[in-house]
Image 1 (tube, rainbow, N blue to C red):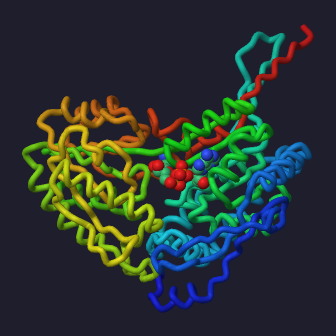
Image 2 (cartoon, protein in one colour; image 1 turned 45 degrees about the vertical axis):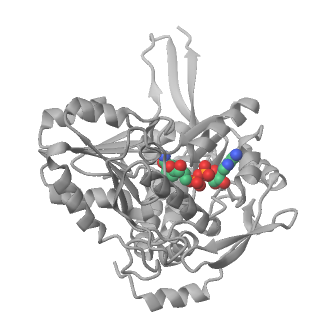
Image 3 (cartoon, protein in one colour; image 1 turned 30 degrees about the vertical axis):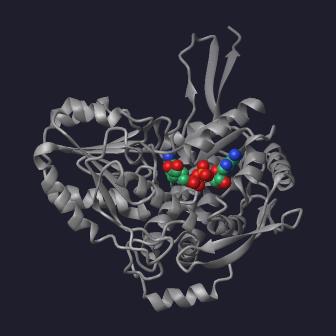
Length: 495
Ligand code: NAD
């Protein structure tokens, strides 16, 4: 991939004029009350744009349009082959606008342009194409009845789906919902994070160009307590597919209970354990992968391996290797294609990470300190060792480049430490012993377990969590289950 040069991206950034309006019923429009909010480029520390601030009236408008087109059948009853063609066109357009989307993502979030170009936008495009390609290959079932009956089990779209997503991988996580939800025939209203709405807004225009009927896909930028809450409490939204914090996820469950019992699918927080045994096949490679598993995306990854568990006999050697690897992850200008670590999403979030680090200093030893005070939103790789049991840095989700290392002396202890968390998103085991790898994999309480890798995978495998990391799964054919109802049709035949 050609990543170009810093000056290329700086010129493009200076010329960028992003679309900032809501997209409802096939048209860009201002919020009904005309209000807007400012979004900030966290790297340049300057205002990026004024974005239309969707609220309840805008949500009501979008839900009415989404319902009307759903009932019309233009999309919901269209043949899977037709939906596939439109979604494939959307994926083509995303490929054509790859650089534009990558730039918007980087300006909005502070993530390195090389990662937006290499990971975020291609990943988002792949999600749309994968479900486009899948949808006309998923069959219903015929049950094993007697000859005088026919029982069919079919899947139907649910209706109006709200997708509410966070800021760490804005377009990618949106497309993990949009791909299966649209392919299954639903109407979707996407609410991007108030911190990173630009790629979602741009995607809406591309979807129209691809031929999605008006109303099938709307985008409402705005705040959680306004547009988000209007969606989660709406009596005519049939399902909400959420990625974000566990705290917000709990609120959505309450809102669903207080409104119409809409289905609530949650991809929430994590504090994942990465366990390295002394018989790890390659400590050097494990250290490199461990560093990427915590420092990539400035540590703002739900499944980041934030808790590193090291078998006593290799702990000191591994920490030394890890500190060496951390040198590959140093904050820089996100628009420079050489940069591997950008800025955190904003200074307020950086302040929260700083407060965790200050707290950690009273509960453990800083083996590596990523604070240099040069940029208000930049924090480099930070590693704590020998923290006290139950230290806050070792239990709570920090969502920054902060790793907490704990030593263990037996497999049983490693398992106990790993499972001692309210979260259960991911876990990794590094060992040469196949039996141990299998034993651990089965007993770790996490939605994904990685053996001798961290966070490998692709669209073919489900992604989601146990415990308070959520329910339901993104990616793979299993994601279609969230966006469809299962219907039994029992037909009594004439004997
Ligand atoms: P957040 O919960 O603050 O916000 C997520 C989204 O929910 C935003 O669009 C926000 O506007 C909206 N929202 C907030 N309050 C709402 C309300 N009352 N009603 C409806 N919508 C509301 O999370 P965040 O800070 O944007 O993202 C970081 C979190 O996301 C972390 O906890 C991280 O672990 C999690 N995350 C999870 C996954 C996963 O797949 N499990 C992936 C990425 C991020």
